[in-house]
Each structure stands twice: as C-alpha cells, then as structure tokens.
Length: 613
Image: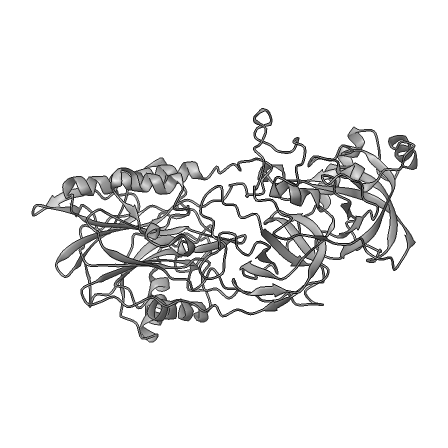
C-alpha cells in the first residue's frame, strides 16, 4: 500500500529542522527548554491553522490515548487527547512517526516527547497540504486497555456545503495561514479532525476499490448523484464535499481489503484515524471497516447502429502492447464487439509499439494491432483494418519506449478509408480541394506535428473516410495529461492546474485545422474525438469548440450521465467526441464498462456516436 508519510529523507529533513532551532530530538535538556510550565496538549500542537504553532520545536510528555497503529509503510501511531478543548478548530489527534514498527497498542495511554513537524506528502512541489506530526519520539506507556475517545461522526450534517476558502493572494494563494473555519468549509472541517478518531455510517461507494487497497465513499448521498450511483464532477465549483477516501489499518496479508464497485454500499460503521494521503487527501484509515453490500451495477451495452448510420467510437486501451496478457486483448475485443456493438470506426488511444515499454527504438505497432484485431474477429466482430502514423521514438510522451499513438480501426464492409499520400511522423497534413470538395493532403496524416504544443505529446491523427458515398473527416486526439496539476485538496485554492496551458494550445491547433476544413466546405462532416484529458466545461473544451466549429456531443446527455472516468470518487469527463455543424442529428453514448468497476480492462469508458451523414 502506498504510504503518505516520510521515510529516511523526510526524517533527515526533520532532524535538520531540529538542528536549525538548536533543539536536538531526544535531548532532555532541549526538551525542558522548549516547554513552558503548563504541559503541552495535542490541541496546542495542532493550533487553529493548518501549520502547527510549535513546528520545529521539541515537546515533552504530550499525553494521549493510542487510536491506531500502522505497522507497514509509514510506520507510527495516532494518539488523541480525551480531554478536548472548547475550540472546534483545533484537532485533538496527532500522528507520531516512529519509522520502525511501533511498540504501542490501541488503547494505551502514552506520553510522547519529540519534534513537532509539518510533513507534506508528495513533497512541497505537489501542493499537498501538510500533516502535523511528532517525529523522533520517546514514548512512555502509562497504562493499557483504556477506552478510546469517542469517534467524531462525519456525515451529511457535519460536512459544510462550501469546499474551501479562497487562498491568500499575498501568500501565492495558500490557505496555510488562514484560521480554520470548520463550520463553513469542508476542507477546514476535515483539517480540524486531522489525526482524530472519526467514523462514518453506511455510505455509498463512489470510487471502486483500486490496486492500492483503497476506495472512495460519499457521506452525502444526494450530492451531484450520477445516474449509476457515482458523484458527478460537473464544474470547478462542484468538488463534492462528501467524498472521503477509505483505507484500512490491518495489513493486507492479515485482512484482505474488500472489493467494491461504484454504487455499492459500505455498510455499518467504519472508524479510525483521519489521515492525509498524497493520492487523494483526507483519508479515513479504518481500524474498524464496514461491510461492502454489492449493488446491481453491470457494464453497459450500446445500441447497434442502423444500416444507414455511421457509428464512430473512441477508446483509450491503456498502454496496450503484445506483452500484455492475452486476457487483456480478449476482454478489450469483447468490449468492442459486445458493449460497443462493433462501431464502423474506432479511434484507439494508447496503442504501444511492438515490444511495449522496452526502450530500444522500436516504433512499429504492427504486432500490437494484428493481435488486437485478431482478438476482435475471434470475439465475433468484423475484420477491422487499421491506419496510423508511427511516431518518432520517445517523442510523444507516455512510458519511455512505449511510443503510444492513436490508431483508426475501420470495418471495410461498412466504410472505406481514403488513402492520400500517407504522412509520416514529421509531415503535416493539410486541407486541399479535390473535385470541388474538401480533402486532406495526407490521409492518414498528423496535424501540425512541429507545433510546440505537441512537444512530448501525442500528435492528432487525421483520416478521410467514405460512408454510403459521403466523406467523413475523423481526427483522433490524445491531449497532454493532467500530470503536475494540484489536487482538489491542495494548499492552494483554487488549485494550480499547470497542465491546462498545453492542452489549451493543443485544442486551439485542432480547432484551427477544423476551421480550415469548414472554410473549404462549410458542410463538411468532421468528427474530433479521443482522450481530451479535460472536462467538458474546461477552457480546453471551449477552445476546441471555438466559433461553433465543433460541438461537444457529451453535452447532449443529461448531466447525471456525463462522465468517462472516475478519479478520487469524482465521475468526470476526459474522453469526448465533438461534431461539426453539418452533423445536426446524432445519438451519443458514454458506455460505462470500466471506470466504475474494480475489475477494469482500461481506466477509461469508451464513447460512441451514431449519425447519418
């Protein structure tokens, strides 16, 4: 399981902090000089902001009851003062980082001396909030078998509706220096409980169990509910305050973590310390874990296209390469045939080269595509043909040596591909007139590959298709990832979304190309699709649609059905299909087969659009 606390490097940083203040951890003289006549209590350490007023100082004989012990990963224990003060902003719990397996047990009354510090999971550059903790501890067990402090209930009545205060402009948008207002803001509320024993009651699962033994619930069952049980992230202001990550204290070898899908229920009481995790923020680390009650969620199946309808799909197949198990190929193929009803054109993202992430200069994906199309045929699907442009080695991002690219699959029994001087990785396709109609200069070809917007990123793949005598231009995209963006629980509010800059430029490049096609033929059938890596309400989506050149078809769905990906309990849009004005009538389906489930063939849900050219 991933840990959210320091190891040797962080310990070294804390020791350096102690040296800088002239107070060495474990020094009785230093400890005596650091404390006043009144004993230091945990709420004194936590204070009324996110940063401890005693950070960098030694404390001695801080008393508490052990409420949780972690023997793996970031090893240590939580303790809580049963004698709370009357200030809701001050937490009564704190994490004690021992580095080695703790020798205390839940229910022990302890006295702890050590160094107070603020540890930032993921490092300061991550933007994550810090955890107030005591490190280099000297621990004395006073008694054992004590009753634990009563767990604080986290529920729809206690979590505020507003998510976070605005960051201080004078502090680069940080909320660290602001006084906590736990009755007003959800992030302040959770922070005021950091390290404390908390509990939730029966709650709906909004993020399936992942490979790191964690899941997400919402304590607000009514908050932005998705049609199938999730929680919709529909705007930058809809962070969904009721989301909470759930892990467990028990080692997996001792107690397997339950498998849950979106829409299941985590029933009964789940209780334990409230931690902060770099992979999701506030996390209830369960000492007592509720029971998963399975729901009825099943993978969706879209309707088959009519004879006179063209079905176009996009599917991110998550780094598919020949070294993957045959089972992955078979499951993806079955999804294309049974869940997507064998679309006429499928734009694939994340097709890797013939030896996957082996970094040896290989760029061809012939074996990958041969294996995948054979699996589709074996699953009862059509004998798809493919078109793509091989990338330059290690120039398109993704796993080093993997050389991911977009690929068109098409069913030659239903649609034909118009080959026009196929381009290479560095050659830009353009717009020409052919017999009075718009045409591509290179088909397949890449759009503006020399544009700096595509540096270390996948270049768009354009192709020209003919269906029932009508030309359809398809542009397959895989925009830059969200890597580097700060999480919703960031210390900066609003969070810094640094990756948007690149995607905005990419969207503008694609939009400009579509406008060239429409300038040549205002009635051109153009579809831009793929893993846009951004929300339907984002600046990226707006730039793609600029001037009415394209319409995000997912906006035709009810808001409760707009999602293709689930991240940290938020159901959100990353994959899209956009249409030119000539495509006035269509049927759109976000086919939910992966994102809501613990067992996934990809982390994305495919999208399908059906229309009559």
